[in-house]
Image: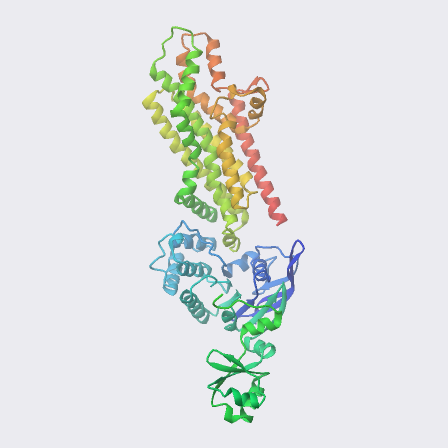
Length: 302
Length: 297
């Protein structure tokens, strides 16, 4: 069942077509990833979905509700973690969450229960009473996630949630989201330019200059847009050259590119004496992205 | 209403917890205080004595009551506007930092947010001005008290009018500000200019004719004049009790206890009408323009 359906969505800023007639749908309970460079149209699409930006054309339905007619109801079913923290830095985490909870009609005992369960889930107890401006990046991000979950949403939108975070904080944020997703059947709509995050998604849409360049499960995309790679450890370079097998020298292994898994398997079976210590791996999302858009995607270390 | 009060509370807490915003709003009144201590007081005393017939002894307490009335009416008239602009920066900063998007994604209506910003600004500005008023009354009580109990409710009404004007003007102007530079520009312009425009730094009567006409179009000036009138008339009456009535009128004119609109003296009732009426019109304009901007998207 689709919880989000977008048809022929369009939005321009002056002469720039930020979103150029895209259509996609998101399965309920799935982790859906929008992959694209800055300016690809990811955040614009989110702004339209959350009714904070008017669209030029197209149709958006969320949980069976139309964004024009039922925007207030849709908003109460969505939680969003923005690219940059939007909490009030001079107020404490608790103060911030209390204000935001009230905007969804959560007060008194309901609020106390909600804040307790989120504090347990995200381990906020140590810093929830401190001003947000004095927290570390990772602590602030955990509060952002708590804020996004304060209304117990059906859909959690994560707009580049881990940009600028250290690997440990990134891991913590993802562990929490995964756990919450499993327990509550939450649908997660992620925009990212980290291929490692997109590779974990159930379905990926690659956006380029406001258009969909490719879409599918990570596996499908890898099969469609990249080949397989055989990593050969302690390989005999002379023997490979004699057999006319092209390879590249990587850090500690030789890499042979094959069109697909069966081609790789065939090559190994035909030359068993050359392949003692090896592994077959699929192409990465950055190879998919490069192949689909002709552009280089940022990696973990960039 | 619960949502509006919740957001109002959030805006008020930010104003008082953000020390930079809070102290920035007090810069103009502090400048005024420094100017007064360093030279304005002596200038006013000199001009007061110069206008008096020879041989009249004026007690120190009366001079203090007269100049003190001038000072506190200036501080209150200016603060109502500068504090309102600083406090209203919360609205502009929410837009600049895109923090406002965190409210837009909730079911709260934009109209509720606008009302909450206005309420919070009105409350904080009024609170700061009332604290300033209490300090002013204590100061006058200690240095030279010539107010009557009848003056106090009028002074409260004057402060209320000035705050109404300041907060309405701030809401109207700052809705167009969407950058950090814009906020700084507006704050600087208001802090540096408003003191002159409303006659807080020097009496309007000392301005050139054209400028006097210009300031008579600034509704806030009527607020300062009302404050002057209610803070100073007791001291002026005491000063001129044995002198001809023209002397009283001359002093009232020289020290802005009254205002002229194209050579016609504006009555106190009309001054209130201008102050409250224009503030209401500005507030209405804010509501209309912000709705228009919302529709344009």
